Amino acid sequence: MKPDVEIVEDGAELSAALADLFIDSARTAIAETGRFRVAVSGGNTPKAAYELLAEEPRVSAIFWNDVFIYFGDERCVPPDDSQSNYRMANEAFLSRINIPLGNIHRMHGEDEPQLAASAYAKLLVADMGTLPRFDLIMLGMGPDGHTASLFPGTSPTADDELLVRAVFVSKFQTHRLTVTPRVINNARHVVIATEGAEKAAALAAVLDGPREPDKYPAQIVQPTDGTLTWLVDRAAGSQLRAAHIA
View 1 (cartoon, rainbow, N blue to C red):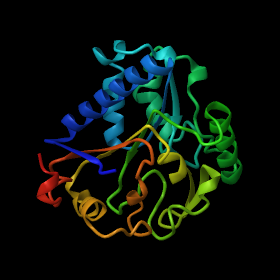
View 2 (tube, rainbow, N blue to C red; view 1 turned 120 degrees about the vertical axis):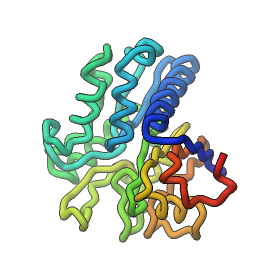
View 3 (tube, rainbow, N blue to C red; view 1 turned 90 degrees about the vertical axis):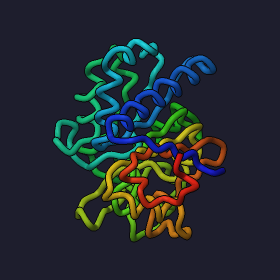
């Protein structure tokens, strides 16, 4: 399925669009199934969107008791570490909204990486079945084309059956936890938010170049029975083919 590429002017518009997509997805899922399961991500763009979700009018737009928060990836650090995706999300909006603590499922980055990955996979299976299906997975993309914590240099689909992997990221000399493409591509909706001129070349390669997922892991995001939306600011989209430009 061809992805939907939505180009906005700047980071502020991008954050607002991402927050609104979260609200729309939540309303749809809650209306249809009574709950909204979302995997959130780290990064500056999501942070700004999360802050908007904790403010009016968006914070009152959904019933947070029906929202269940998971994480698509995490750094292998304690939850109070400045690098923790959980800490960022918690400070930006989770601690500011009326959501039951039991609805928030963080990855335990402070634990031994392989054990933490296995434990999170078991949690996903217990909550959503053998092949977990999120209503929404929120991702970003780095200037090198990585997404979640799937980095260039190794096959992003390695150990796909694990659902959650502990990957060693050579450029940072550390482990990270990440859901696998098998989980990502089973989602009902995946959104990848990308901003900044430093990401323009990678974005053009991912969307318009040959398929090289080992080099550009973001190319593996192709939902099998769902939709993919790229939210892109003008700077990041500056090298895309004209077909993408609204």
